Amino acid sequence: MGAGVMKSGDDGGRRRRRRSRRNQPMSEINVTPFVDVMLVLLIIFMVAAPLLTVGVPVELPETAANALPTDEEEPLAVTITADGTLLIQNTETPEAELIGKLRSIAAERSSDRIFLRADGANAWDRVAQIMGALNAAGFNNIGLVTDIGGPTLTGEDG
Image 1 (tube, rainbow, N blue to C red):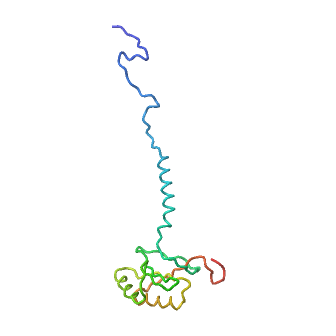
Image 2 (image 1 turned 180 degrees about the vertical axis):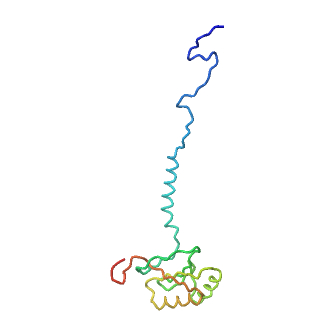
Image 3 (image 1 turned 30 degrees about the horizontal axis):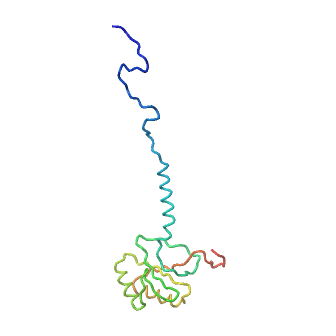
């Protein structure tokens, strides 16, 4: 038996298929498409979020008060529009039925917090009457909703 020398390209009749370096599967994750999709979704949500706010358009008076903290429940809001229309959330309610509807709502809620949104064109006595009705219906924690950035008591704009 003799020892032979094989050529480097000769496998003795057997051919082994070796993958070249560029044909090997890539083991890293390409995050560029992922980042692109996330940025597109972020832009979509940033544009769509302001459109999801539901409310009745009223001109709220501006004050220097801070915003109230939020609860777990969806806040209940009563709105008085410039023409004097009463709305519970977005449902128009006659003044005669306001206390009855609010009492039935108060029986189902765990919180006695309610927000009163009144257009600045309303007279104060009208707002005070509605506040009294809210209190009579069982809501003792009444928050008046205003816009921020109004004048302070010192006369400076906030």
